[in-house]
Image: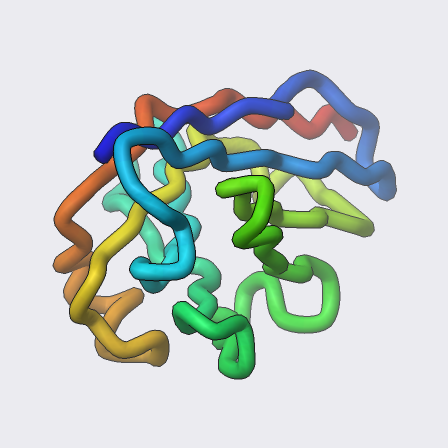
Amino acid sequence: VQLQASGGGLVQAGGSLRLSCGLSGNTLNYYTIGWFRQAQGKEREGISCMSRSGDTSYYSDSVKGRFTISRDNAANTAYLQMNNLNPEDTAIYYCAADPHITCGNYALMSRRFASWGQGTQVTVSS
């Protein structure tokens, strides 16, 4: 399985971006999807996940109410819509997939996803 994250860029505070995560080598609906980010000098932080069916989603407190995770299993692509961005959101964003893990706080805290994309840079200017 390979993951390709894209959609990052430079945006002003208050702006929006939509990240995409394309999966190849298998079918997306076999996988729980997670989004993580890592700011310079900080640990990788789990920010959102979605179950295989799309029925369950989970967000960290840092992004709840501003970010929305979604998936299009037919297109083998997951998304992270990011609104009301602020400079603290500046980081490299990674998507991850795992066929077994259950979406929730444990999944984001443990980071035990089997497959990871290469990351896409998001920079928010003040």
